[in-house]
Length: 125
Image (tube, rainbow, N blue to C red; front, top):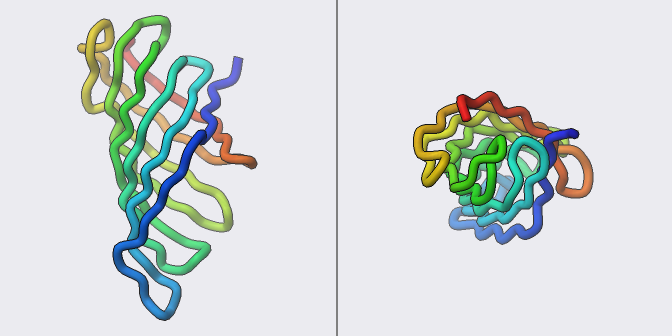
């Protein structure tokens, strides 16, 4: 089974826009997960676009569901970029609840087409 997430909602609001196309924005995103993670998430990214085709972003994601069959939620801290139509991020797990209270781990994703991305996750769960 592959590890995939699908973007299910995207609401992005610029708070600084410049004439050269650069901008700063807040994106609120929802996703559904399958694979090692089974569940859904809500993310808030702060995004800094150097142009319409290039950005860097940081943010926090709260995933609710199961990780390796254990129930709860995890908070993930992202550090990513968007270049040439592809988003990628390296991330770490910073907190967990319920059966995932003592979880730690890290991973990455690289986006594909249609709002889908493959992810990798290494964890102690």
